[in-house]
Image (cartoon, rainbow, N blue to C red):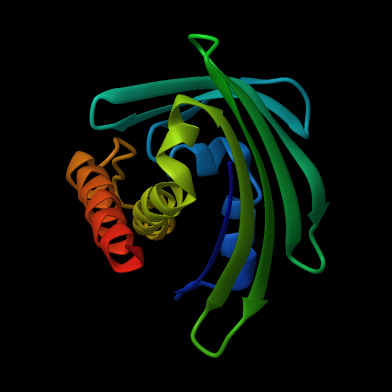
Length: 181
């Protein structure tokens, strides 16, 4: 199952400050709900884990992150992540392209992420994955802005938001099926 997520957001901080933080996996991981860097291999390779819970399903992925491209002058990056479910029942691959541009009020952050998921989470389908990913990304943006402002952040998953996405997807699917009948 593949899902493509695109997001853009503004931060009222200079591009250099945003880039310095966004291009550092060690800093960024603390903003991603349920994620942690467990080891830095070298300047561009890291090991980490992500724990997600969707209602009764809990998935923990142990994996690797590579900063495949980091263009400090153009403020562009490509990050690749690969993870295996710790129970051996699935995998997830991610490729994210990020691009920063300076604005009158700060910095615009734009990225496109392609997720490929195999296993238990894949059975929920791309609609749910997109809904949940959107919730995770919104929580990431909130955490990232707080981190740049020097505030405390909470990278625990917002369970209420995740369940809301599950319900929204399931209810939407029921009505969609009835409309097609």
